[in-house]
Image (tube, rainbow, N blue to C red; front, side, top):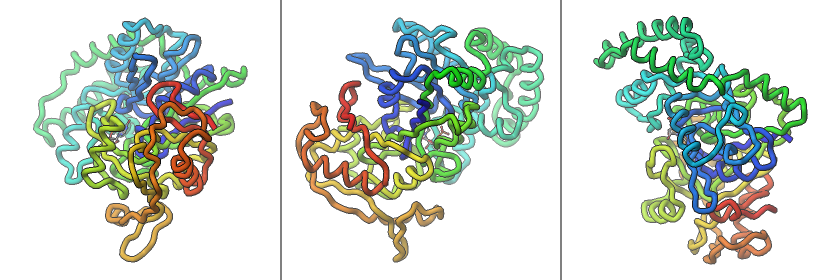
Length: 423
Ligand code: IMP
């Protein structure tokens, strides 16, 4: 069975934990988009692992992890991640990790440009500053450098010279910055190529051949549906397709070979960075939930914005991703609240929106319409069966299921591997 796991909100839904659980039953896990802007946290006993580029399935013996062509790779960050894992005695051989030669490489000028572009914007996106947007922009304008280019000194030289000719002009004339020196970058990136050479392959061929011999693949989405470049809250989005469609173009595995889509949602909503967020909490609750849920970015450490569960968003996610099953994460964070709200529609200038509006202004000024439910005010961490949850917690889960139109199969009630209810 080939399964895609996506985030149904603005990322950080807890996909890392679900992927860690599901990857035990998959032979291969593949990352299909994004770069080291992502951060997946997995807790195993007392050990906390934070992954940025490598699928967390690397923790399981005998499994293969793949970084697909749709991802963008900062080679230094990847090498640091590999070194960190090896230090903790996790094996990272070329049999366990494979990297698509077609994945684009994040260059030093991408990281700098990310920050400079933000500094010039009136409405800042609040990017992670990892050079992700400029790297994808170069991919689309056809001047990007790919992993396979790092293995060919002549091609790398040609492409880097072309890039620096243009970029150095932009840096000096538009931003008043120093030039990038060809020699330093060339040497550095050829070195990365040599260190990563063993992992680079035609990942699309590898994946399709493995599927043909009945190996199962788990596709790991990074970020979330509303950070998708096409369907997210543009321009406050990331630069790749984080919805299920990206799984195909980002790996070379056709949609006909994908069997199931599972989405993660938090029992409430969070987002990092700027952009519209209709159901965002007022200050007091924001601090309470942020601290209880440890809502700080796994990559940048930035505090996440928090709000009530927004059924309008997730309903749209269910449609866009063809979601067959949902996993509701961090339900336990809501344990203490006497009352809970679910946003069921938006109101703007007297008009009711039950569907996610395209018009940015509507979304930005939308007033959420809430349904109120009683809280359960009981600890849920120790519970392993749905029927054993407090009745009000079950009512909350059932109501979410009804409003978003997808079956809730998993309910997570803590950060540890076993703190999950499977229905
Ligand atoms: P970028 O991906 O660094 O360009 O950032 C674009 C937007 O996506 C910003 O609002 C980031 O905070 C957000 N973003 C990127 N990666 C993640 C993630 O893994 N979780 C949550 N938000 C993210």
